[in-house]
Length: 502
Image 1 (spheres, one colour):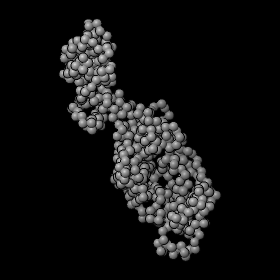
Image 2 (image 1 turned 60 degrees about the vertical axis):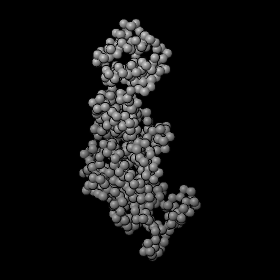
Image 3 (image 1 turned 180 degrees about the vertical axis):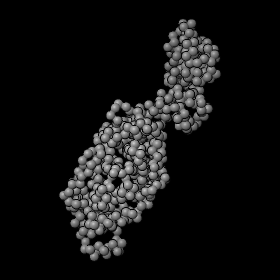
Image 4 (image 1 turned 90 degrees about the vertical axis):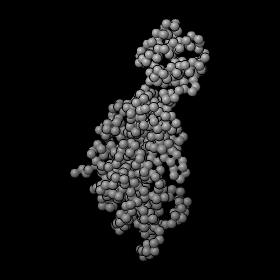
């Protein structure tokens, strides 16, 4: 019987959440929801030297923003807890002891200095079959000495004993049959000197304890797969081993190597989901959220990095993705990150959004600039008018601030060369038409009638009108602007601009 789908996103709380990590969470989440399964957040905090305060809360916040609330987590609890590895410490030692007893692992007493000396002696030093018999461990020391060292509490680690001349093979749901030569795999540490497990032991023990059915993780974990498979086997759990899914890398825009935070800094785009401030240095790394991305767009663009549904469709809601997602459609090849394409997704989702869904973000952006917005109904009308022109939510500031503030300056260079007394009299006459409180179509028709009556050219008057209302050569339809500003404000702006133009 196929076991119930239980998947986990298992980040380390060491800093900001890279978009590759969010995509791993997303593919786990989609697979779980599609199969009425369980999506688990497990915090892998066994490496206490790299632990960063606030990072776990930040990860939870990123998942919530993306709409991927875990079914079980440190915050929510569940029947398979605790959900922080540091709180499961006691369980790992018994497995390390079992592996030693069964001859699958051994104690290593080498000091950091001894290991450093070996690394200097052998540039590509690996602690494994070629070197293990030259080191200080329970394979080379007499049993009594090992016992004595343990009783004295001499610092030591536990290492897995990798077999020689074997092939470790498994089925990957993306890559098919994958095989590793054990002669190229080193004896990884399973239990550190502080009694904490390394990732290798903890991930297997926890996946077993939490009854994980499928492991979705980045392809950078492929080299570790033989160690994990051997541990499932050596601990006697091979029949319960999860299905493996190693996701393709997210690559730099030029395709050369994995996308890193440095690439984002260098090329001017974020690689983190949300703003992250390093508590040690105070350095801020920008995130997609604060840059002005909608969570729907962020999730959509991540899903399309390495997956498609086999059609030309590009816009998918979370519900669409849950229905359409399939592991078979995940690519083996890495996916290049394209920030211009990312902005395109955001633009499309902004266009699809109701003004009420965007209003709180826009309000907050204006508040930061010290602009007091009018009532919500007016703001919603402004958003509806300008949203098709915005790639980022932050673009609403530049695209719509003139609706809330009278222009302080004008693009006079665009007006002055062709300005004359006839145009001044035209606009004075036009203010009487504005006062009639017409809709945009009627206002445009009357504007063109007046142009014809006065024997002028409409093209030479439209731009000055826009600059009067906006200050520059941008914005939505100029008559839509005038109607939304209202008769009084529009007339005031025309009269104020006429003084500047003359």
